[in-house]
Figure (spheres, one colour):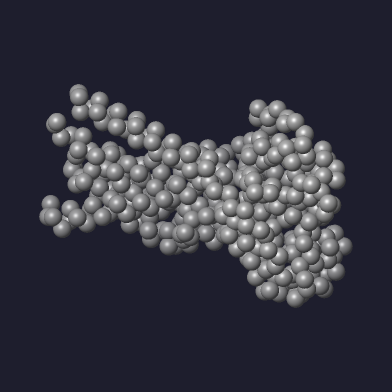
Length: 245
Length: 154
C-alpha cells in the first residue's frame, strides 16, 4: 500500500517535472538576432528580394514559410490584416523554408522563385496558398499544375521553364533555408519582427499585432479569446471539408 | 536470465526510451502544425483524427520514453512504446499499398531535429523497437530503474 502510494506520487512528480521542462524550454527558446544575408538570385541575376510594403515602413517583418504547410496558408489572413490595418507601416520579406516532410514543397518554392524573377512572386504565392489543396496532395510532382498557375498569371513560359530546370535556383532556396536554420528557425511559419520571434499562426494571432502596435507606439489591443483553429490540415481535392476537423 | 542478456536488455531499454523521448521532445518544441503536416503525408490517416493525434502522440512519446529511461513503470512504458512502434510498422506498408507512394521523410522527428529518416529506415528501426519493447514488457525486473528503487523497503 505504502509502495503504491510512493509510486503514484513519484509518477505525478515525474509528469509535472517533464511537462514543466517542456513548457519552460518552449517559453525561453533563445531568439538570436542574426542579420539576414542576401543570397544570389536565379540564373546568376542578383536576387530580387521578395519584399512587400514600403522600404521606409517602421515595422519590418521577415517570414520563413513553406508553401505546402497548412499553417502557413492559415496565417496569410493575419498578414493581410496587418497590411490592411496599418497601411504604409508594414514591410514583409519572404524567405523560403521548404520543410523536408513536404514532398512537393521544393517544386512550389522553385516555381515561386522563378515567378519572382519575373516580378510576380506575391501573386504566385497567393495562388499557391489558395490552391494548396489542389497541388499538394498530387501523387506525382505537380510541375504541370505549377506551370498552369504561372501561365494563368501571364508568365513568360519560356523563361519559367528554363528557370524550373535550373539547379542554381534550388540551391538558392536551400541557402535561404540554411539562413533560417542559422537563426534557429525549425518550424513554419516563423516570423521575425526585429529580434522578436513568432512561431505558428497562434502566436502571430495572439502576439503579432500587438508587437506591431508596440513598434508604432500604439496601445495594445485586447487579445481575442479564440480566433481560429490553427493548422487544420489541408484537404485533398474531392474530399469535402466537413469530413475534416 | 544470463547477465549478458540482462545488460543487452538494459541497453535496449535506454535505446527505446531515448528514441521516443527525443522524438516527442523535438515535436513538442515545434508548432503542432508541423507534425500535422507530416501526418497528412501519410494519406491513409483519417483527416478528422490528425489534429487530435498530432497533439497527443508527442506527449505519449516524450513521457513514456522518459519513463522508460528512468525505469518508472518500465513494463507499461515498454508495452506502450512497443504498440506505438508496431502501429508505425503497419502504417508504412499500408500507406505504400494504398497510395502507391511513401512520404520523402518519415515525419518521426521534428523538422529541427538532428535525425531525419526515410520511411524504410524507420520501418527497420520500428521493427527492432517493437521487438525490444515487447521483450522488455515481459521482463519482471529492470536493473537500474526507479521501479526497483520504489519497491525496496526503506
